[in-house]
Length: 325
Image (cartoon, rainbow, N blue to C red; front, top):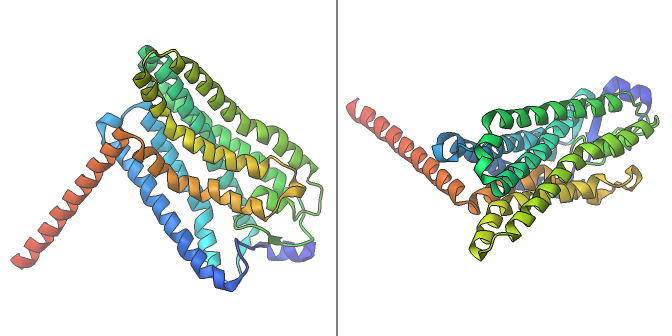
């Protein structure tokens, strides 16, 4: 599509995960289920942490923010994808594409920095337990969240401004299921050299900084744990980190596979790998953190019991009103 036509239409076409018509409805059902599980699971995590006094500490504070960010992260991508599964046109406006790209980068980076903050929290809890309350106080936790959000917004704005200066004339068909940076850059007729340099420098630094923070924190944790004389003590220390390490591996492993290679090598495999950190990780987080954490499991059980009790009270009240009338 020519440049003039693209400017007039102001839209892109999202290919999605499959172009075969017979795949659309099964994919719609699959991703709808995954999206609903993500919403319900992460919302339960947030509500359980907010309602249980025993979960009012920095680790669970960061987990509640992470769960909220995961809800936003998947909501940026999945609803539009679900609509396109049932639509023949599969279009997205230019402005909507940039907005989707912006918020995808924002919440993706927030996730990254929150995982780093959680690694710092585990380091302080294991290596400096007597000063944990003073070091990880509410003010510092709020500052870490504020920094994560502010930096992520500015980082994403930079990339959106660089994309917005490009011209598109060869095609308006995005070989992806959402407006990710690399597939959009591949459509540009103007030079993407600046975009690629920024992505490989500032972009890599913004991802590597929290990753390095996580690595250093866990190296210090390993040194501290190996100095614990009892096997039971070592297992207890490691158990508090296992959930976080699992999420970190899924998140950074898939991101590294997709983004840390040249734009010319972007293929359909990257499209499939993107599902891991856009949908799968956000869906699995509630299960990883609740099934392997006794306090979190107990908090969820209390929340569900309280919800059941309220529902029973409502049904009893309604029945009494019907009988009274």
